Image (cartoon, rainbow, N blue to C red; front, side):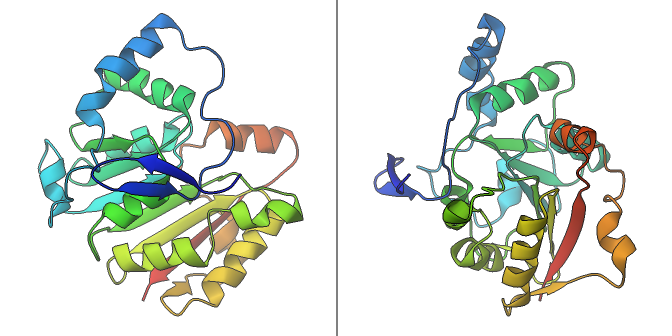
Length: 237
């Protein structure tokens, strides 16, 4: 799929890194209602300029902002917003059914330190100010296993330039995948990028899940199918 031009604000932006379906099964009426009624209050409007201090985006006082790209069912994002109430979180998920699942979880456990974006993460990264993020997570992204599709992988030269611009010095970029070719791909791309360094002293560092890792539905499926995840952490230099 070629890059798709999206209308969002006074100027059209290019949807660069989202391919495939944005919807799965037909939403139940309650899920559709959550997208219609709850998402506008949590969603970010890129037609408005980004604040110089991202803390202004949140209803709760926060001292840093983390970004999770492609949060899937929202298990990790929902868990982390509870663990770190003093940190703001932005969750990106263009798949409508996954967004509805997280909104359902937020009905019973709302989060004042959370904002959401339901489109291509590159649009959001281009909107954000420089050195504004205290961390970025990319867990189990679509691996695009066929060689002819590798150019669609989220980790590439263009997105790494965006991450380098928006991450604060010293902030982590965390990447997890159960696909060896994507893990190797990511290590090569980050090794060759002057703005990042891999934080690892031995195999345990990438074989051990992150602190307080709750697991995800996709990870559980990978384990059932005999695949093991790798958990990489890079630091913005």
